[in-house]
Each structure stands twice: as C-alpha cells, then as structure tokens.
Length: 52
Image (cartoon, rainbow, N blue to C red; front, side, top):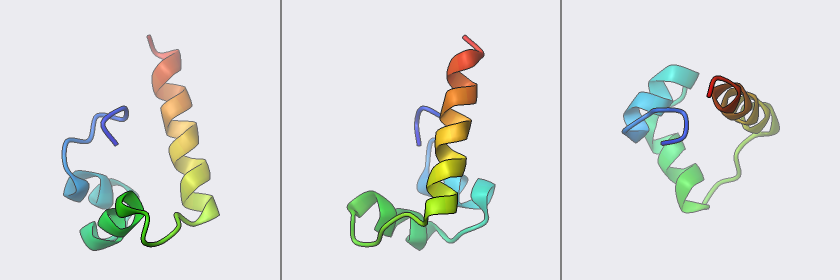
C-alpha cells in the first residue's frame, strides 16, 4: 500500500474500486486478495519500481 503511495486504506480502496473494509480484511489476512486484484497490485508495484 505504501509502496504505491497510498497513505490510507481508504485511498487504496478508492483507487481500485473496493470498500475500505475490504482492504482492511485483506491487510489483516482475514480474506484472501482475489487473483486479478493481486496481479494488478503486483503490476503497479513493478511499474512504480521502474520509475526510479
């Protein structure tokens, strides 16, 4: 989350179109991150790293 520049769960949730509570459940490990979302996040992190 922080790697991508999102300071709050709400910021990340708004950026990817899910609720803040969904992001919270993912971060707490109570619910798995769906594969398409995980792939999107990995691609965003990789793109962020290439910029530097």
